[in-house]
Length: 253
Ligand code: NAD
Image (cartoon, rainbow, N blue to C red; front, side):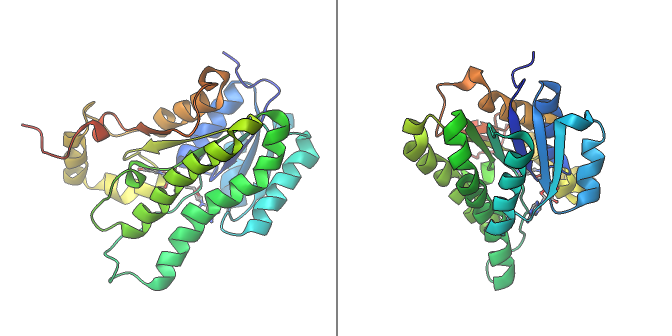
């Protein structure tokens, strides 16, 4: 199925994990893809699998609005349109609020929340022209709280409500805005966690489907939300979590 033939898609955080899988998925369905992130080598190695005329690599830090605006401008310069903005770049946080630094708070908020706002703000004028859409990578950590992750919980909670607000404000312009809310997924962000078998077993125990996610599990849903199949869905923060959020938190018996 080629749902994105002649469509232009920007993916931030495209050099690894969910972003890289999202690039591959859109490209497999015919899209021209702009791979954005901080490290050119990582972006180039993902892009190496794509036909040369179908991609653009652009180094951009999503926490800097000017760089995100430059990313969108470069996309329009090369492909003359923008249909889908995937605001996916993100970092995690660890530790209680009194234990991590104030700088660490600002870093997480500036990448995980400001970065999504920057992407939406820069992309929206072009998405209004194409009746395009935005898909944000939020998290189950934006739908509820985790132990020792208050900075991340706050940023992702912000993404969840920003998704709803933007959906209300731009629906009449024909632009849909949704997010995916993944649970624990095997990526660079979680490499250390996946080294701890006992910890991963605890996660699996809480997930109805009995396993953690692979990046493709999330990328496929991002593509669905961006596709015509999801034409009547906007303002939704969709858990992609194997049933984790179906539980009220009590342990399985
Ligand atoms: P990842 O580390 O493989 O990917 C994140 C990417 O974002 C990296 O390539 C990184 O270089 C890039 N990035 C970081 N800061 C950036 C910045 N300032 N500007 C541009 N790019 C930047 O991890 P991932 O798990 O694929 O993360 C993708 C998204 O998924 C993140 O928003 C993350 O919060 C979210 N998420 C991940 C999980 C999980 O368990 N892995 C669960 C829920 C949500």
